[in-house]
Figure (tube, rainbow, N blue to C red):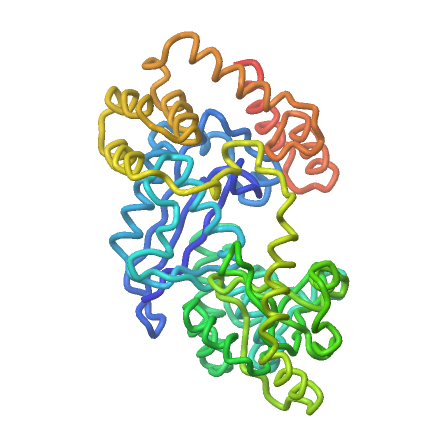
Length: 453
């Protein structure tokens, strides 16, 4: 079974924005639809939506504040129930691993679900059709028609790719329309590039990916950076981070001879890991990487792979260098960014399960019992967003101040939407004619009401 899904959101940050719409279609293994869902929710009180997001999705202020829609907390509970009801399945979309799944994880985390990782539990796994499109471009280019954007470059955006390949009912930037377009592209790749499709299915399993990379054979890795078209790299397994076993090194054997790196220290190997272009790339085995058994391998590359396969000391040094890249990285400052800051205790897990099914008065008591600072902070915010009357007046006042301080920030790098960013984006929208004037006026009125409310 597959679940093709998509979110429309208040902005581009999974940590500091929220879903507004979720749509998904459950299919069987032949990609024949079996069930579907299309739901929306209200804007949470601590979120300031980005005007550009509203311009792109067509969401207007009355849709954000519709009292008949579920709250974000209720919406998230529906999503968790859906994963349980439709699973086990492969959860996939277009750019889903980088964006939609992070949005889902953040929704679960920030609404105190016991596990943010539902799409990787209980037999569920993941896939990303955008990665599949990139692999098709490189390995089976004739399988699809490739659109050209307004700048004369090949475009891999779904709203151009799907119509170019015969999907004429694409309602772009509507979640359900994007889901249907994604299924259409997936079927074309399955039918016209079956080898790419079949290996991508195997890449859903990190066990299968580990077996592939640890075989030592020459592999093709497909990746895309920036606006350039996707490209492939010929290489082989070069080690594994001791701090993160899901992160493995992939040595570009067209660029570097491993014999020249053997015996060098961690600093020299670290330079190969961080060089531009990279001699050793980091591949995450549990994120459905685009790895394929290579064909027509040059003899020199084959020789290098055979040499590399037996260099256990080099493998170990590469792993240490990969781990060292992040050794000095500061811990995330904001609670929303601390989603990967450690697993919950068993006691907190039990309390979170109770929290999901309790009444609001009991939820207040549960939040006070949580051990994890992250969970207590998020729990307080949930109470403030849904039942502020249950908070002490001083706590409620503090939450209002905290939210307003974020919105009024003058930090140009603030990771959430600020009023300063709102003013700039509305000006850009008006200058570019991206919305009609009456819609812009409604936006301006909405943000004014939020500011003065």
